[in-house]
Length: 122
Image (cartoon, rainbow, N blue to C red; front, top):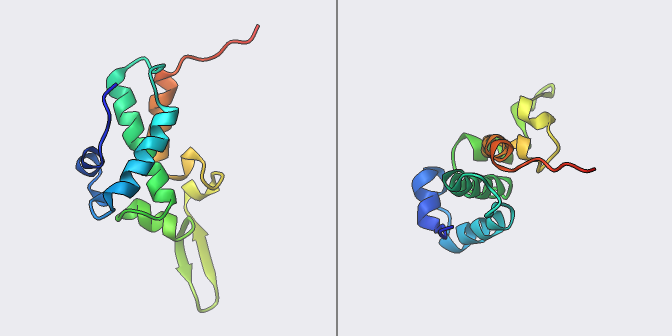
């Protein structure tokens, strides 16, 4: 499987264009630990690594756009200060850091479900 670069991540997800290359490479390296040769489709594995890296970066507060704003807000869709009013987004119901907490993570889960064979215990 070919190695992904920060340029690949920036091309696929422009919201990370302003993030330093070493930060992006670290996320790509972390994603490579979980997405490997056991995936059925090589193109899906490539996209899976990009999605997982974007998920990790978003949780770390990197990037720009709606995903980064939602992560920075702690999962709240609406906040108000006078007579406190808070409203969580649907994704905030997920365990913090769980793949369901970002759009990137949810897309990664879809890819993983169709590419990683289920394990059967006998």
